[in-house]
Length: 177
Length: 177
Ligand SMILES: [Zn+2]
Ligand SMILES: [Zn+2]
Image (tube, rainbow over the protein chains, first blue to last red):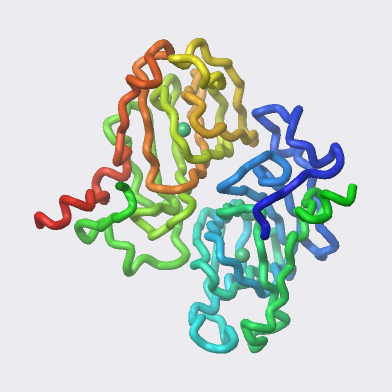
């Protein structure tokens, strides 16, 4: 069950944060993913959100998300740069198969249909790709694929996700403290 | 029940829209609210979203939202300009009472706690206030107050909301067509 969530350490406390926050002062990290800068603008574990979460992410040229799927909704707004969305929409097969390529560009928006396997790349060698990302039902539960021919059933659950690891505390671990 | 939603007219059809959309080509309207420009970037009725909705709104100087509340979550990201958020957080009283004033500014973010009565004003005489707005559980159901001393029980339900009116079709009306 992912329903019960506790917070650990004062860095993860939702109390004491100002209501209005300067986005440029929000901590950012690459979470050991080269070329990534991630900020949780409004988050479940950091800010007490229950139904939506908002991220600001910057991808350096050639950096990208994993190939992945999730059962929550996801909306992207491209603030800067351009790139390529790879999207495998046929979820009837045993594995994603060849994805369709969609060019994404500054001031464009797109959303990922629920459970469709996808990957966002900064395929523009010249500049960073910056996106605002909205997801539903945080914290996000992600299934990661090694390649597009990996069976859906072999995709690996990554939960908590990179930026949720520090503040997420599994329900049954709570009792041990 | 708001659960069953049908679509009317081809303007409201979610079919045939490209996956990646240029935000500057999304239709905008003021919905008879002076000083407002509203765009539905990713919407329930227009784009088939079920769990989140994203708007881009611009408020001319002195323009504002109604005083209102809703039971969904709402996150703002201020893209341009500045203004004032009025927020009445004590929902234990019979009416909202005097709201707290929060200065909001370019590159700031804030969210509205569920059911807190609030109003956003562009209180900057010099420039437009532009915000990206995220809500959960679309389409939004809003209770509107005439002033801060109106009892919660007297607030008027506005549903469908301004930008949902054209495409929302009430479940029981469907049978009459
Ligand atoms: Zn995703
Ligand atoms: Zn609101």
